[in-house]
Length: 118
Ligand code: 5GP
Ligand code: ZN
Image (cartoon, rainbow, N blue to C red; front, top):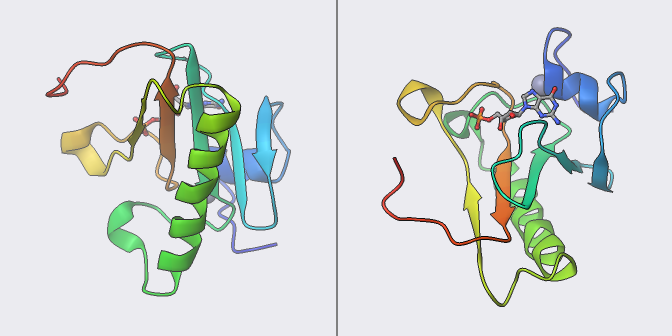
């Protein structure tokens, strides 16, 4: 298993210590339904490795993050939202409202979103 942090809720989800609706998993990435969905499709994709924020990704993590984004593209296709469109969001630190300090990307779809974000 990659590096984990004991008090991190998303590390616990990655270790299956918390009951979660998992929608995708491989050796390095796990995806699950957001507990408070903001759209008909709202999945969270995380690296199993504990990385706190987007500020903390290293050059070697870039491959992992790139693979994770490609898996989000695959999930969007599988959910039937790829053609209409969808949004991928990574909130970093307080100005973006990051609540969980384990890197995650939101896959949101199934409705129209406004821009700019609030
Ligand atoms: P952030 O604002 O950090 O980008 O978003 C964190 C997201 O994680 C929120 O959308 C929140 O609903 C979701 N979340 C927080 N705790 C849990 C949990 O225990 N299980 C699941 N499935 N989602 C969670
Ligand atoms: Zn973690």
